[in-house]
Length: 146
Image 1: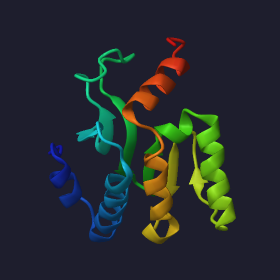
Image 2: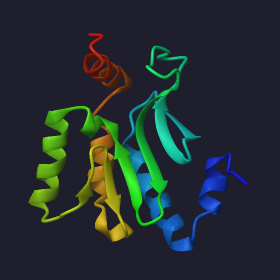
Image 3: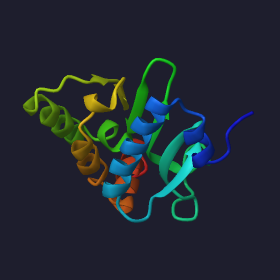
Image 4: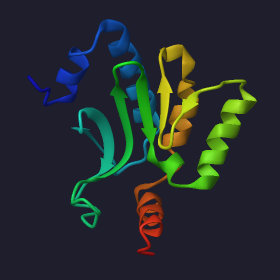
C-alpha cells in the first residue's frame, strides 16, 4: 500500500528514521520562506511552489525547492536552492568546512545516516536563502527563460 499523506509517510518509517526525518522537517519548517507548500510528492516530503503560484514548470508539476526522504541506505535532504546556484553551494560547503563537517553531498542532495551528522541550524539557514520569487528567477535563468 502506497502512503498518501505526510503523516502516513512518517508512520511508515522505523522509529530512528522517523525521529531523524521529523527533526529535519522541523528545521526546514523553521527556515522556509512564506509561499512554499509542504506536500508528499514522489514518495518524499517536499516543499514546493504551488502551480497556482507558478504553473510554467518543465514537467507540469509544482516546482520543488526542498525535499526530504528516507532511502534504503541513508536519508537525503534535497536542497534545490544550493544545487541551482553556485554561490549558495559554495556558501553551504564552506559553512560545513568551517565546522569540520564532511557530508556526503550529491548533485542536489545531502545524504546522512544519522541525525547527528546533519547540522540542523545550517539546514534552517540554507532553506531560508530563497524567497519564492528569488527561486523562480533562479529556475527561469537555469532554463534559459530569463
